[in-house]
Length: 144
Image 1 (cartoon, one colour):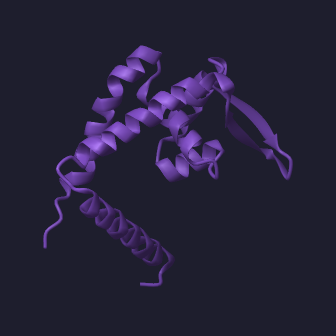
Image 2 (cartoon, rainbow, N blue to C red):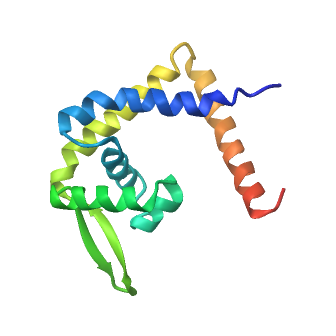
């Protein structure tokens, strides 16, 4: 069985194209929008370092866009009590309407790429993705 290596690239390109009009409406660069949505959707990751490591974005891009989001009032910086060298990034109340629009856009995108699949097939697909995710974790831990 061949897995088309283009699938991940096409997914990313299609997602960015889907986000384009919302980013223009919000006057946010794609990277700033991605950072805001990442922080909102993954509260366990709340530092610039997390964004760099998990999202694989360049540190300078993260720094510039976090500064923009803070200046625009969408993010706040808070020192971590257990380690004052670390700074948590928290979404503000002002960011909530953008996050709501972003989550709707993300859901619409998922629905669109799953068009033509019935509910049973969608469920099976999600189960398969979860198994693959666990297998990838095991490979990365050196267990498989």
